[in-house]
Image 1: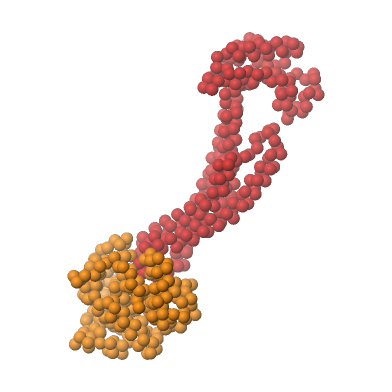
Image 2: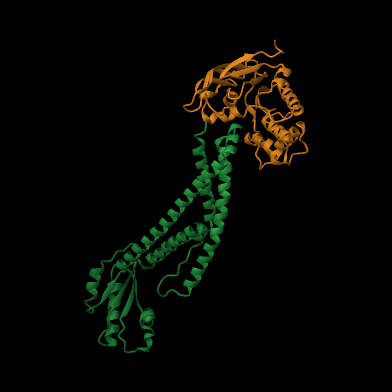
Length: 241
Length: 268
């Protein structure tokens, strides 16, 4: 069972798309534009794959979604807020509504699995007694109930990935972004991971997964955001077509 | 640094206390010196007349002639035991206490007293006391400057150490940032570490400081009150010295906090 916490953002029927990009462009410094004129709207509770060849701009687009950077042009609305114009002081509360599974996991090696997963809750100021209970439940849910005290360097790639996923979802984010989550695991583990994401999506979490893995995209039937040379096209999923 | 800073601060406080003692002890008092007369009887008569004139002078609270033994004790550091030198001409001294707030015209008083006997001198200690206080204050400024320089070096050290730690932990900071950590949350991780280091380092520096001050007081106590005042600290001043590790910890904590906040403000 995924832990639940009160969110300061009440979701109502009038809630606008959870992510809206309008004419977004991005360049790094004075380099070439890596994303051109991106328009997209992700409804709440949707599930999308973000695909494209290496260097197409997938990580850059995800980076804009998890507010690691601001667009060079255009505007971004998330959770009904113009986040590209939001002051630095207000960004943390928006970031806390987003869970991210990084391609290289980015777990903290000096912390146990439990403490890694607990980080977002500690950041959110949740009481320690609740943290311990919820993190333990969540690690059991991802099949790591007997690895609470293990540190990332002693865990396999698949186990680290599940810790990273648990950390991304522990604070019950409205939006879950995953960058190549199946990139370094075998087919069996990839299928297991996809079942985890599907279950989270059924619980209402909006999901965007960047991947090269055509098999899981085609198998799942979810729509695809395809990036080619920095331009985005929406490919409807088989479930919708 | 705490060791050096604490010693400099203790020195400043000791000098301040000594100046205060000298000031309180000598202000409001005069010394009248009567040169030895042609005979002991003439000398005693001069002392009696001077005492009479002093007691009749407005603003004088009391006047007391020091005995030969008391004068001998004052001269002992320079002349040795003067009681053994009966024929040595020793001046007579009168200790005068002035009423609080009263001001005596010392030159006029001296001129009047010289009518009793030529060579009588009145010393209000003002000239040498002021020079001594000026000198002591200069020493105090130097000691406090040392404290300030050590403090500034400490702040710079913490600043650069914090910046280095931020560079080392850049990936962790980025991660916390992306998870929605506020700048204050990130700063807390650094400031709490800086506080613990500052406090621990302060305690390590305080121990040798206390040993040095104790040894200094023990050594100077053997000098007695003969030539120089024994350097002592009041309980409040001891408390200030004892609080230095806490102060060091707090300064380190605040320095780390504002260094982190300043650097994080550059992040998106």
